[in-house]
Image 1 (cartoon, one colour):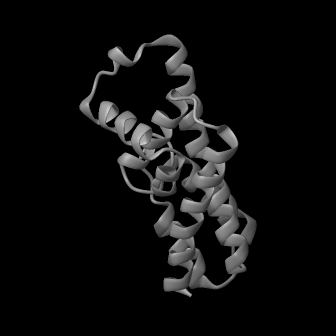
Image 2 (image 1 turned 120 degrees about the vertical axis):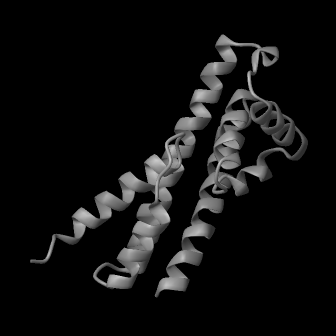
Length: 142
Protein backbone atom coordinates (compact mmCIF):
# COMPACT_ATOMS: atom_id res chain seq x y z
CA UNK A 1 0.00 0.00 0.00
CA UNK A 2 1.46 3.34 -1.08
CA UNK A 3 0.89 6.39 1.05
CA UNK A 4 -0.05 9.77 -0.29
CA UNK A 5 3.25 11.65 -0.88
CA UNK A 6 1.79 14.73 0.85
CA UNK A 7 1.77 12.74 4.11
CA UNK A 8 5.54 12.45 3.80
CA UNK A 9 5.82 16.19 3.22
CA UNK A 10 3.68 16.99 6.25
CA UNK A 11 5.67 14.53 8.34
CA UNK A 12 8.92 16.11 7.14
CA UNK A 13 7.60 19.61 7.90
CA UNK A 14 6.50 18.59 11.41
CA UNK A 15 9.77 16.80 12.11
CA UNK A 16 11.80 19.79 10.87
CA UNK A 17 9.75 22.24 12.94
CA UNK A 18 10.03 20.18 16.12
CA UNK A 19 13.75 19.56 15.53
CA UNK A 20 14.38 23.29 15.49
CA UNK A 21 12.72 24.04 18.78
CA UNK A 22 13.93 22.94 22.19
CA UNK A 23 12.60 19.39 21.59
CA UNK A 24 14.96 16.95 19.87
CA UNK A 25 13.98 15.54 16.52
CA UNK A 26 15.28 13.61 13.55
CA UNK A 27 14.40 15.69 10.53
CA UNK A 28 17.67 14.77 8.80
CA UNK A 29 16.76 11.08 8.94
CA UNK A 30 13.23 11.78 7.66
CA UNK A 31 14.60 13.87 4.80
CA UNK A 32 17.23 11.26 3.90
CA UNK A 33 14.57 8.55 3.87
CA UNK A 34 12.20 10.55 1.65
CA UNK A 35 15.00 11.50 -0.75
CA UNK A 36 16.14 7.88 -1.04
CA UNK A 37 12.58 6.76 -1.86
CA UNK A 38 12.54 9.11 -4.83
CA UNK A 39 8.77 9.62 -4.79
CA UNK A 40 8.84 13.38 -4.25
CA UNK A 41 10.94 15.99 -6.05
CA UNK A 42 14.11 16.75 -4.13
CA UNK A 43 13.52 20.50 -4.48
CA UNK A 44 10.12 20.18 -2.81
CA UNK A 45 11.63 18.13 0.00
CA UNK A 46 14.40 20.71 0.46
CA UNK A 47 11.94 23.61 0.60
CA UNK A 48 9.59 21.78 2.98
CA UNK A 49 12.37 20.86 5.43
CA UNK A 50 13.89 24.34 5.25
CA UNK A 51 10.61 26.13 5.90
CA UNK A 52 9.65 23.86 8.79
CA UNK A 53 13.06 24.09 10.44
CA UNK A 54 13.25 27.86 9.90
CA UNK A 55 9.81 28.42 11.43
CA UNK A 56 10.87 26.38 14.46
CA UNK A 57 14.00 28.51 14.84
CA UNK A 58 11.97 31.70 14.50
CA UNK A 59 9.70 30.42 17.28
CA UNK A 60 12.82 30.12 19.45
CA UNK A 61 13.91 33.63 18.35
CA UNK A 62 10.50 34.97 19.39
CA UNK A 63 10.77 33.19 22.75
CA UNK A 64 14.08 34.99 23.27
CA UNK A 65 12.44 38.31 22.43
CA UNK A 66 9.64 37.58 24.90
CA UNK A 67 12.09 36.48 27.62
CA UNK A 68 14.09 39.71 27.21
CA UNK A 69 10.99 41.70 28.06
CA UNK A 70 10.40 39.66 31.22
CA UNK A 71 13.93 39.00 32.52
CA UNK A 72 17.20 40.89 32.67
CA UNK A 73 20.45 39.57 31.27
CA UNK A 74 21.66 38.98 34.84
CA UNK A 75 18.89 36.43 35.29
CA UNK A 76 20.18 34.01 32.65
CA UNK A 77 20.43 30.76 34.54
CA UNK A 78 22.79 28.55 32.58
CA UNK A 79 26.33 28.96 31.36
CA UNK A 80 25.17 27.84 27.91
CA UNK A 81 22.71 30.75 27.76
CA UNK A 82 25.39 33.24 28.83
CA UNK A 83 27.85 31.84 26.26
CA UNK A 84 25.24 31.98 23.50
CA UNK A 85 24.45 35.63 24.25
CA UNK A 86 28.18 36.46 24.29
CA UNK A 87 28.73 34.67 20.95
CA UNK A 88 25.78 36.36 19.28
CA UNK A 89 26.94 39.74 20.58
CA UNK A 90 30.44 39.10 19.29
CA UNK A 91 29.61 37.71 15.83
CA UNK A 92 26.19 39.27 15.20
CA UNK A 93 23.61 37.95 12.77
CA UNK A 94 26.11 35.85 10.73
CA UNK A 95 26.39 33.38 13.63
CA UNK A 96 22.78 32.42 12.85
CA UNK A 97 24.10 30.66 9.74
CA UNK A 98 25.09 28.02 12.31
CA UNK A 99 21.59 27.78 13.79
CA UNK A 100 21.38 24.24 12.39
CA UNK A 101 24.01 22.97 14.84
CA UNK A 102 22.69 20.70 17.58
CA UNK A 103 22.27 22.30 21.02
CA UNK A 104 24.04 25.62 20.34
CA UNK A 105 21.93 26.48 17.29
CA UNK A 106 18.78 26.82 19.40
CA UNK A 107 20.70 28.91 21.92
CA UNK A 108 21.95 31.24 19.15
CA UNK A 109 18.37 31.79 17.92
CA UNK A 110 17.14 32.44 21.46
CA UNK A 111 20.01 34.85 22.13
CA UNK A 112 19.41 36.72 18.85
CA UNK A 113 15.80 37.28 19.85
CA UNK A 114 16.89 38.27 23.35
CA UNK A 115 19.27 40.84 21.88
CA UNK A 116 16.55 42.10 19.53
CA UNK A 117 18.65 41.51 16.44
CA UNK A 118 17.10 42.50 13.13
CA UNK A 119 14.24 40.10 12.43
CA UNK A 120 14.59 40.14 8.60
CA UNK A 121 18.36 39.60 8.77
CA UNK A 122 17.96 36.89 11.42
CA UNK A 123 15.33 35.14 9.31
CA UNK A 124 17.56 35.26 6.22
CA UNK A 125 20.63 33.93 8.04
CA UNK A 126 18.68 31.17 9.77
CA UNK A 127 16.98 30.07 6.54
CA UNK A 128 20.25 30.09 4.60
CA UNK A 129 22.05 27.99 7.20
CA UNK A 130 19.20 25.50 7.48
CA UNK A 131 18.88 25.21 3.70
CA UNK A 132 22.61 24.57 3.32
CA UNK A 133 22.50 21.71 5.80
CA UNK A 134 19.42 20.15 4.16
CA UNK A 135 20.90 20.64 0.66
CA UNK A 136 23.92 18.59 1.75
CA UNK A 137 21.60 15.80 2.95
CA UNK A 138 19.63 15.85 -0.31
CA UNK A 139 22.88 15.67 -2.26
CA UNK A 140 24.25 12.79 -0.18
CA UNK A 141 21.09 10.68 -0.41
CA UNK A 142 20.13 11.35 -4.05
